[in-house]
Length: 173
Image (cartoon, rainbow, N blue to C red; front, side, top):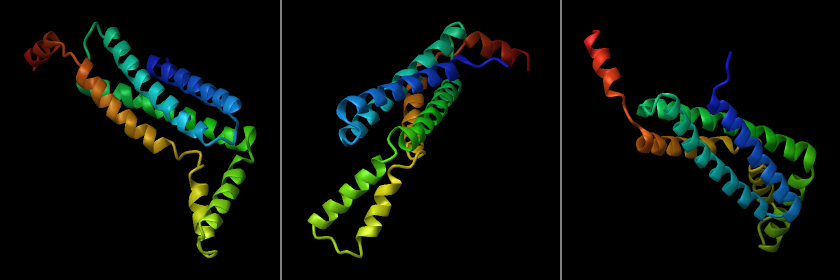
């Protein structure tokens, strides 16, 4: 079974995005909140660029033609594989690379809650809510959402239907 270029490209860009995230965290400090902001921009950039490249390469493979729905399928395949790669790295990052990061940010959230005079009974709910933001697969829905938007844009911009194929297809019926 041959692996499609879209899957290869999305896995490659996913790994590059994770490496960039790790290098940034190492340089800024693993306990820096800005790492997570930059991570979002890396992910979004590699997602958008990768989807357009994938759709373009599929169009090139089809002699310059691609239908909108095929472009949408290619873009979403890219987004799904990319999301899985990022989610797996997120799990490894918080489990093996920086296992105490979540505890650090939860203690900081507790300190901030106490400093803002939050009731003692409300603090556990706040911490439970904060802990959910570090879920390994929390990034999947936004990646799929932005992947859908980028796929729709790429399909709309790059689509070019093969009229000869449609005419011969109608003549055969």
